[in-house]
Image (tube, rainbow, N blue to C red; front, side, top):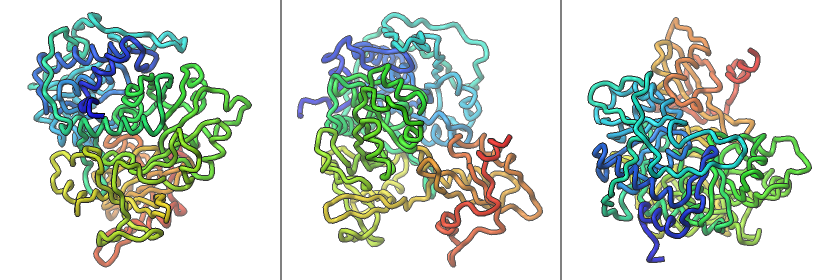
Length: 560
């Protein structure tokens, strides 16, 4: 509709005008209304701009767990025209320094638990000028009263600048430290004039044969995804959407929080997913729909069957991928209708498999569904020529409506041009389309590992391992997981006359990468398999999988 807001600041204001003091979001037992979210976006935006001097187009990173404060930071930046750079809270060391440095972030909003990690990499970040610390429990944040009822938070006039805290790490000269509550200011905010195509957020995707890339998403792209998801799932004001996925992922942001608000509904966010407690949470909170990725459905499926498995208010699930052999049994056991999509951070919802409001005939289990209408999609061969139905090739897409795709990779013009060669975005995924237009995803052509909903850069893990003085070279691949998707296998060649125990390698990795990227399996080899061009033949390592003598970290931990 032409009168719909096309940037996130006015969109939030319109949600507040329509829904006022109705509860919009609950995070970890505390809730805010639509009106309070809008008001606090203004107040914090005033602190970020007039208070510390950020201007539209500046980048500010966010290293925070799911919390109301994290939501405030997101919406305040959107309102002020500051480009939000959400950072995976598992990042540390080289990975954290890379994202903050490559994005050229001038400020970081950070949970206090991650402050020491940030302080360690500050010397590598000459453009960082401000650190804003959030201390859960110090302001409006809290753990709730344990009753399952959310405590409504209205922060108008509630914040006071706290006294300096003992134990705050030193961030060195040139960096000013602020306490987050002190930046909520009751000052008149002059809203910037933003365009729909202006970048709202930079989301870092896993590097494949190189470092991670920051996908720039515009205000319009985020709202396009929001509105399409709401339409696809048929959400309305009576719905309650649930997710435990983090707000540094596109899934929680633009297919849960903004989707619920667009529908005039309510959303419930937690910080961790509990398979054993999930359905009880849904009953307590009145959840009607949830998002899933990776192994989440398999974890629920593996829980012991109970007579009351379908006794809950949930009726819809949104995500991917559900193993085809449990799809219909899962729906029957839990009385939930699943809708799946195929896409990526750059091009979300390329295809969709089943509309929540449509008949079962609109889906085909085992496929990723048919094109969503947001993009044109083709399957092409190595020369870029479209293949006929039934012939596998690379999945490529281009935007159909305006602003449905990402705008490019931040400060990576060559990578952007390579991804968009020929006017089509090359996903790096291999698939096949049948005569009826249903896409079947085959595998990733990219060199990455998919573990429990996280994309892990093989290149990043290999670079970190290679820093160990005993390692000559390493190759990292994914091997099948018992939960679905993959686990990380590191294949190592040591330098002559050097030894390296698995515990020492794991300790080395743990300080240099996100916890989910630390290899589960380690295989020592005399040499890596190579072709005539001296390229490592990773397909061979994947095919060989877990050979005799491969070390299993989890099995070792269980025995201890």
